Length: 230
Ligand code: CTP
Ligand code: MG
Image (cartoon, rainbow, N blue to C red):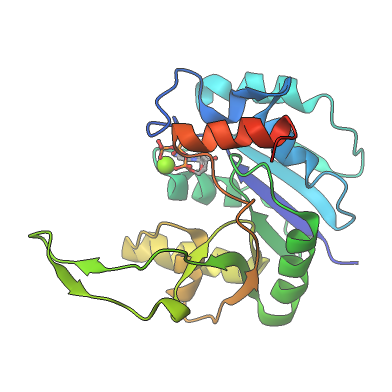
């Protein structure tokens, strides 16, 4: 049986959303966003370890929310995050159980991830070493220069928007973070660190439902979905 360690980063402050409450603790239909997210993973048979990353002042708050989850065979802990998301993951990796084959990283603020996408990412990560979900971009994407003029227009058919969970063989992810830490390399997702290691990353087709709650309009959309209007 494959053993999976799941890291859920929840240590951000939600500047773009602009609310006082950090995003993972906002309630949707009587449950916090992070609880909705954990709901999607807690029954996965491969799950062996769950590491939630929280900022120092929210560690106890997360512990309180976790008491309702009943998986006695899963080692659940809360670890402290850092200034940037990459620092939060880097710290969580120190606590990953070395008995796990795979490590999955999923944003606390993507509560609508579908089980079949998670399962496919696990399958493809076992096969290729690295698998991430994504969707084809809807809009035309342009590369701009510093003066706000278009530099080029990449062919849209090759452009995909990438989401989480990003799933990797444990040692690949460890090596990728070691290399990034040594080089001072930063990326906007975990996959970019793995790509920087030279590993080929497989992309699993996901859906628009797995959006990240980032701006107020995303929160509105999330409310509509939880209320069953979408
Ligand atoms: N995150 C984290 N540690 C950080 C920054 C982000 O664990 N130092 C987490 C967030 O809590 C979130 C996920 O990474 O679950 C994705 O990040 P993002 O959507 O950017 O959330 P925030 O950083 O909180 O939002 P913003 O960038 O608007 O401030
Ligand atoms: Mg952020």
